[in-house]
Amino acid sequence: MTFLALDVGNTRLKWAQYDAPVVGAKLLAHGAVFLENIDRLAENDWHGMPEPSAILGCVVAGDAIKRRVAEQMEIWDVPPRWVHSSPQEAGLTNGYDHPARLGSDRWVAMIGGYHRLLARGIHKPCLVVMVGTAVTVEAIDASGKFLGGIILPGHGIMLRALESGTAGLHVPTGDVRDFPTNTSDALTSGGTFAIAGAVQRMVDNITRHCGEAPECIMTGGAAWKMAPSMSVKVELVETLIFDGLLEIAARRFKA
Ligand SMILES: Nc1ncnc2c1ncn2[C@@H]1O[C@H](COP(=O)(O)OP(=O)(O)OP(=O)(O)O)[C@@H](O)[C@H]1O
Ligand SMILES: CC(C)(CO)[C@@H](O)C(=O)NCCC(=O)O
Ligand SMILES: [K+]
Image (cartoon, rainbow, N blue to C red; front, side, top):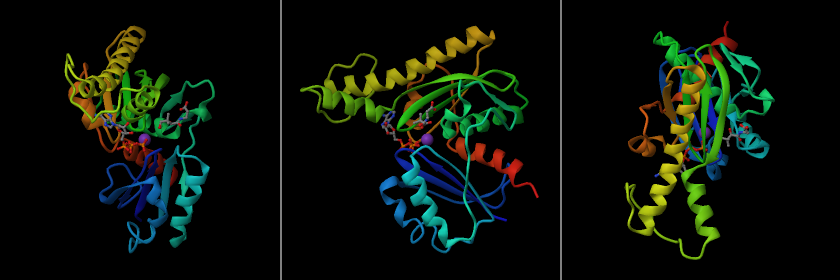
């Protein structure tokens, strides 16, 4: 009864194999590959892996990538299922104008975050921060309603935009400093503070709206780099998308 969870982002595909499609399942194996290498998943990462009994994923990388991922899974007889953002799922309500247009990674991460708090008996507003190719910050109230969220460029895109839009900004990566005194540190700190500042602003928005400060959960490949620079307390949860996929799978694949 193993379960394969997939998170196909704009830079990398992340996968995790669990012993069952249930919350709290045991993680058996996991990996991440850059999108340029996905055509070799069947012969590399997934070679010799027992056929999963169910596959559930979220993709934001586009249909061509989704097809190529599906092709790699033809080694098994199990059709992959993909999460689509919906008006309601797993106790959350989707406040997006057009719920289906919300990135499914955002929806799944919110489901993971909200249930993480519920499991601890916490009924408070929640902010879910994802730091990847793009950065998203989602606001969920204590009742599980997604109020709305922001999308901003990730650190890499910000720096590449500056490099390509100017003549004098081609420098190595610097360090985060309160008062940067060289170009490298100025750029690295600028990108980091743009993200940290955006999170702080969403904390202010949701605190004003809900009358209570939120719990903040942060995930994504670059979350650990952002953590020391945050102005609010955040909990780092590397597996947030997989946690959300397990919540959904537990409901969908119930025998
Ligand atoms: N010092 C940094 N601080 C914050 N973000 C950074 C830093 N350095 C790199 N990044 C960002 O981290 C991203 C790398 O994320 P990675 O590919 O690990 O995340 P991901 O969650 O797999 O992304 P996706 O899901 O979008 O594919 C890069 O796109 C870059 O924007
Ligand atoms: C914002 C990203 C790129 C974050 O991965 C993704 O969730 C996406 O492509 N979303 C679709 C647009 C939206 O969520 O409004
Ligand atoms: K992602």
